[in-house]
Length: 90
Image (cartoon, rainbow, N blue to C red; front, side, top):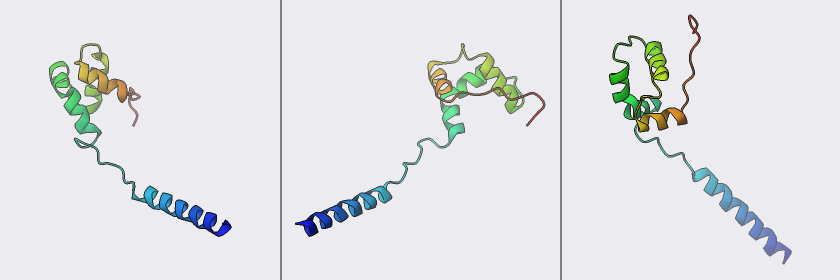
C-alpha cells in the first residue's frame, strides 16, 4: 500500500512538472507597447499633438490633453500610465 501511494505521489509530481514546463506565454496580439498605443491613441495624437516634434513633446502633449482623448485612449493610458520625464535628463 505504501509503495502504491509513493508511486502515485511521484506520478502526480511528474505530471505537474511536465504540465508546468509546457506552458509558454501567449504572444502579444498587435505587436509591442508602441503598436498598442498607436492603435488606441494614434488618431488622438495626430489631432491633438500634430505640432509636437520630439517624443518628449508628444508625451507631454498627450499628458496635457488626457481629458480630451478618446475612450479607447483613456483606457490604454489608465492601464499603462506615462510618467513625465525630467527636463534636460535622460
